[in-house]
Image 1 (cartoon, rainbow, N blue to C red):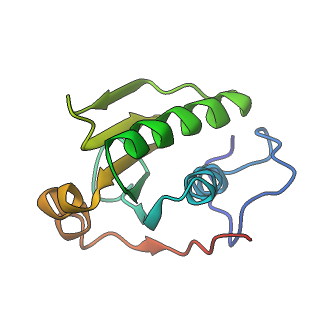
Image 2 (cartoon, rainbow, N blue to C red):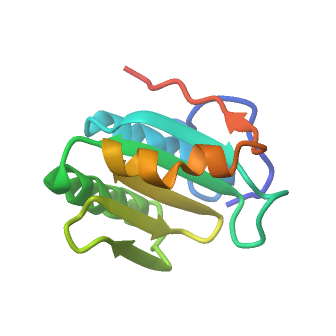
Length: 134
């Protein structure tokens, strides 16, 4: 996977060796979108933090949805040859986080997302455009 940022869209051939980190993050966002995650935001945080390049933040309807989104994402990333370095979640699955090194995925129930307010915390981070594919 190349570190160079792609200009737009998800790489449709899904060749992990030709995909940039941004391509993979957009693919992860698409996977979550297709499983009904909403209010997806991709933040480019490489210049602000020392542990990752991108944060992908998504909202889920309920506890089961948080868990299902995490499981689906894990399977889809494994198909690209990527395994999470760690996966955490609250005991009652109000939020979940998966760390893929170059990007970190946060899935929150809506009210929990407001409490953590990652977008506010990282307000200086540029937002990467993501347009879900039909």
